[in-house]
Length: 321
Image (tube, rainbow, N blue to C red; front, side, top):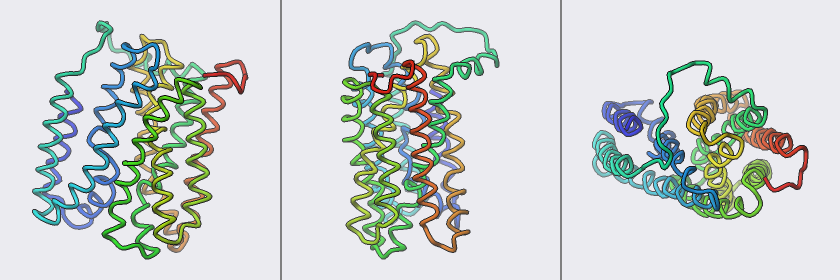
């Protein structure tokens, strides 16, 4: 229930948002995240206990809900702001989130019985003693930092090269819409070839797309093409994250390890936009350095997760894992 209260409660105070805060909230935060960003972490933990076979496919199907929200919310919020104003748009959004997450909280159930234990700070450091988990987490930190740069600046950069603002505002919806394909497809491929192999492939592909397609993108067609292809890779990355944790974690520790995995990467997501903005400013308004940074971090993150796979499999690069 905490996710519901935090999400809905965090939405309501924005009724009083004005000026630069409102602009930042509209252009970046609301269009970058769906309301499932918080709640899906908890609900995904329940899936692990129900699936031994085709677990990745199950995760991919469940994760499509986040993509659907990512398509609906940017368009809905933009239309509401134009028709009823920012405060009422936030109230309507908060109400919808409250209804949806209430339904989720009432229907999600864990198969494994609860086994409460006394709180201990030491428990939060034990998972990082596992080399594979530590490498996977650090790789996710780097990839999250790099991948959230295009998620934050895609619209602004598209407008800067001449794309109509009305068309540009749909780019995030394009990313989220195409990510549905990535989420389902990655789940199926992960069950065939292994979740780590699938995750490494799509994250390397995302980094290559940033460097080879987003950097030279100079018109509407190339920008939309990048948004579509990057969305597929980003969706696959998002859907497979809980499966990676499950692959290198005892099932009894899934909850704490999943929480730690997302907690450490949340800091890189938090600072990604501001640091990218400083890079953009230091480059005199040129987006090239920012894009190079984003693509390089995506590739670096994929490489660390590759290292985790090699360590876990005894340095067998072709092993299914």
